[in-house]
Length: 405
Ligand code: NG1
Image 1 (cartoon, rainbow, N blue to C red):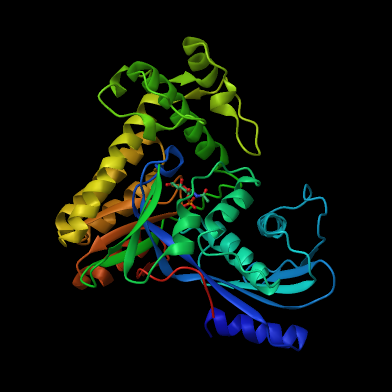
Image 2 (cartoon, rainbow, N blue to C red):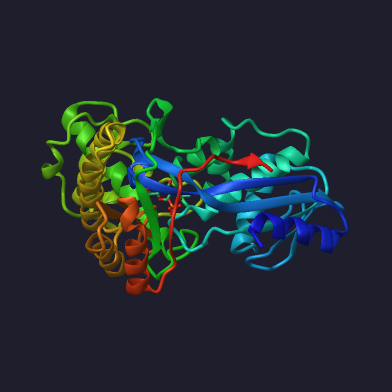
């Protein structure tokens, strides 16, 4: 039984009522443009057919919620204290608060999207809950408003995330990748040919940003800000607030950056307030922690150029060149510190099985990799991936964004 049918039947069984709202919120794969969004540099993800389903029916005050994939029922009181919540309960409560939900409801959630990092299960969950509660409450958020609402909810949990996932989940169109520029904000739907096979495969290790990967992720956000301040000073430009690498025009000065320095050291060198680098939405960041500043800037600035190049080669269906860009992205992410031995082995096996190219997708530190390949090699790439890591591995298709069903 598919996840949609399962959640509708479960609502009927548990509450003796049909859900009045059911929302499908897709996961996503990032084709290229990794760890660039929080520097306001471009990304090119697409939504996938797997996702999260959120069903809502009438209920008493507060919100009763349960998940079929991670059963753990809870009633979220409106305006209540959130400090004791953990796991998906935190994400759910954050969405309730951000959407300003006032009515009583019962919510049941199901998914056919693995929750192991890399396919954006947290944003699919958050966008889906926001859309479901907003729609149920009679005031559905506009598609264009959803990314900002979801970003606010996720940041309140302590991940200083960029806006890639929330944006593509909200705005994606079937058969297309979504190029997203953030400075200034604009989006472009880029067609992906049916002749391109795309496989997503698990590395065997999860990387929850609400957990293990949180510091690895946030420290790279801070390192990018420090690099932006140093490079902007060299170039005599305004780095923005918070400082972002999108304001830096040239990457030729990257070699002048320190290989490692703390935010406190950078602040004292520039005579600026360290808070400009370490002020995160909901977590503390130690200003004395050493940061790999040069490697981080080198990756982010080169990755932004690869997004431009990928858009051009996608438009001409030059899949060999697209594969080389994916490989270069993975190599660069290894230097950046987001890969892992398992992700390196997995992407190597995908290439050997006939992929044009392969790279980690999403934040990394574990999670998923993707490969692009000729349609005739899809099965071989899936098999090689499963043999290398134990799976799962599956084909993904560019799909539509969040919607009612
Ligand atoms: P994942 O971990 O794959 O959901 C995260 C961020 C993105 C982006 C990528 C790296 C969240 C919700 N998403 O994606 O904004 O920075 O890492 O490119 O934290």
